[in-house]
Amino acid sequence: MQLRLWFLLATQLAALPDSSAQQQTLENKIAQINSKIKLTCEAKSFSGNSRVYWLRQRQAPSTESHPEFLAFFDPIKRAVYGEGVEQEKIVVFQEKSHSILNLTSVDISDNGVYFCMTIGNPELTFWKRIQLTVVNVLPTTAQPTKKSTPKKNRCQLPSTVTKKGPPCSFVILGLLLAGVLILLVSLGVALRLYCLQRRARLRLMKQFYK
Image (cartoon, rainbow, N blue to C red):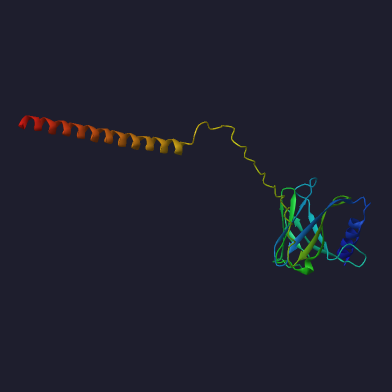
């Protein structure tokens, strides 16, 4: 009973904003139901032989809330748990200047404020308060909307190169027609010469047979 009353007084001291025992920092954590959460407390000034105590208030600090001693880590005895604490669910261990409290299969009943503290002679130091909120579904972070950049319409400038003379198709057609005309003229000249030669040959033969 004395231990519980002592932790009740310690927790109320931690909740006072102007308490000389308070050197704590506040941290908010959100966990999904049935998941695992890791609570870390860094006490920079305590030695390797110091005990680090973990307490919990299931509701926000008020006169109606009741503190609960969870466990402390002793370098010699290792982890020592409070009465009624499920050791399969809560595990306490220490890494250098960090005291770590692991909670597995969290549920709504694990909501509350978790305190990490050390006891000196005679000072009482709270290093951290962790507000744990257990929810069914973790909130999603809204993705920032990307601004769509309008596509720039590129105007094609008219070509400044001016083509001189007739188009190529007309030039080719003209050359073809000229070639055909030359062939026709050449054929006509050849036929004319052939006819003249034949007449001359016929005349020569008539004169020879007279």
